Amino acid sequence: MDLTLPFYGFNRPGAKVSEAVRTNWWRQGMMGGVKAAYDCIYQFSQVDYSDDLRALDIPVLVLHGEDDQIVPFQNSGVKSVKLLKHGKLISDPGFPHGMPTTHADVINADLLAFFKS
Image 1 (cartoon, rainbow, N blue to C red):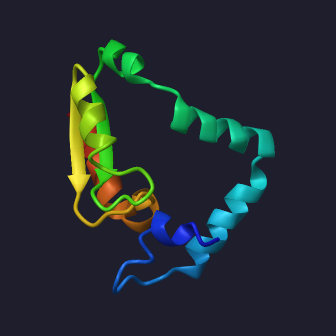
Image 2: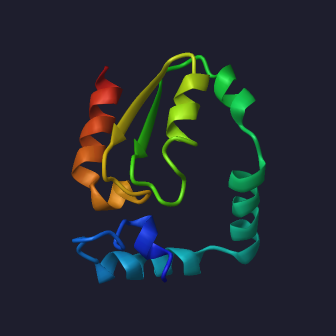
């Protein structure tokens, strides 16, 4: 479960580690199949989805934590929104990759505002 530390930013100074969140991470991992996990790694590490993003012609919200240690913000969030015709980027300083869990109140408010717009 050591990957949970950077995933949720628990390795940052002053971070409060949630053992419940770490245990839930393990639970989710145990529910998935090995083949699905392997295929997932291939998809996000070796497949270029740039053309798919360019083809979207609907409003798309990109949420990205600026302290994402798993998928760096500059290499993903910033680049992704530039490929979208109607993209909106909301980035949050200090938020980790697992920000929907660690900052659900902020993320949910951002999603609701986007859906209403």
